[in-house]
Length: 192
Image (cartoon, rainbow, N blue to C red):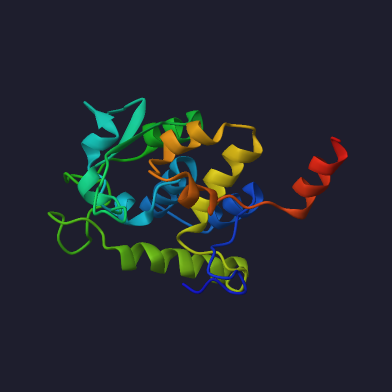
């Protein structure tokens, strides 16, 4: 999906935009959207989640595990497993979710032995953005990740803690995700 006028960066979404998009989604699309929003993980790893990565004996775990083999490799080809504590809102939504009869949290509709493909996940977002009138805002499947990281930074969470949560090996690559709004700059200057 194009990142319209964003200089290659996905748009940061507000909480009200997240809720508006979520309202247009149903079934597994809603939970997928919630996982992306509350974990900041890339969609490529979310499509490959197994039920056991979030549940034990049918109950949500306290963390979600994104396996190394499903995550993006760094410039040296290294992949790292990432565990993220589950936000209370996400925990409640996981409890309410009807688990599929598959090892995959999001099984492929035609073959439950495979997970849903990235293209199908991207398509549901494109359709929801159209329904919301957001198709030209620059929101993409990477917006959740940029939003997650930027919001942690705005809340005053230290960059090393954010790095530990997101699994970035480099502070330089992590810092490219953080959006600094004109309002934040004004607030910073006002502190002097």
